[in-house]
Image (cartoon, rainbow, N blue to C red):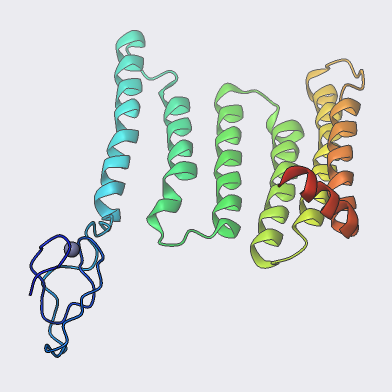
Length: 230
Ligand SMILES: [Zn+2]
């Protein structure tokens, strides 16, 4: 049997030409359940092999590490800053590549893990350089930011409604966080307190308040929708 339009050879079971889509109808042939001559999908999607991809990504992260190791050794005859560079590369790997090991990476788990890894890295920099800023500055700043982001990620992941309220509250919390940032900068590094944090606070609070207002007012949502979409 052949397609009447394009002439391609067809199985007797074919109800439609797989090439041009013309409906096949042959009054004297019974269309039985025989497998068709051609696969239904002309370009079957290839399934990625996560193990091979992860291997390549680890290799890509090891190259800059090796370059840092060699250049630090060559320049100084000993390791001076390799640990800091390696820690940064490792942190990049944890944040970017580690979730890809899992089939369905759950942000509620890996976002706190990323913050934890970043905090450990900051602690190490502070310790290695005798900075004295980790406990009074880096820990509360990253900790506060972590709490806000993790709360937003967890709420949006498990609640299927109220995203406007979650993001609105998140923006307002970020505004409060910038105030804490300025105060801690002042306390730890003796930066003059001039109150610059009030400006991001105002902007973030306005955005957050606007989102919450949209969440409350259905008519405001409709008006915005009409303005944004045709
Ligand atoms: Zn055809």
